[in-house]
Image (tube, one colour):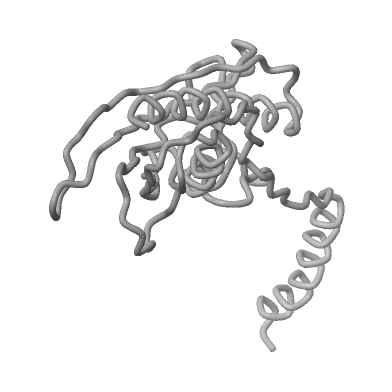
Length: 201
């Protein structure tokens, strides 16, 4: 073994030992998957219509293609959480929540999703545009572009298209605070969505 090789062989275990010391000092931070869908807080209609609503899966806005919680920083930059995520993709959770809220409204005979063979009288779809917390402004925001249409033959005739927005106060900067405020903002949007669809009951 050459002198250089001997020095490298001695240095390698020492370097690895040093790395082990640094790594052992790093605290373990588990990932937390937070449920998103807020529970409906509606007063069911006393006389539901006979119409059936089909809810298409909502599309995800450009910033909502993964599950990390989004925080808008004071300088306008976006921080995406690595250790704190939604349990399911936000657009999927919002789709399921929209169906739940429409069912809870009591405005319709049935609410079905994509893949159902039931003939629908109305269809609902759109895009979840925004879902984030803005600690510097003390609020969370949600926005949903919703399209209500009537099936006609093999197509659909649009009846209404509207961008629904809502905010909710943010109590603090802890992950649980960020989650609670975003859920409340989404609830505000869902409340508006139900009212919009109910216009065509």
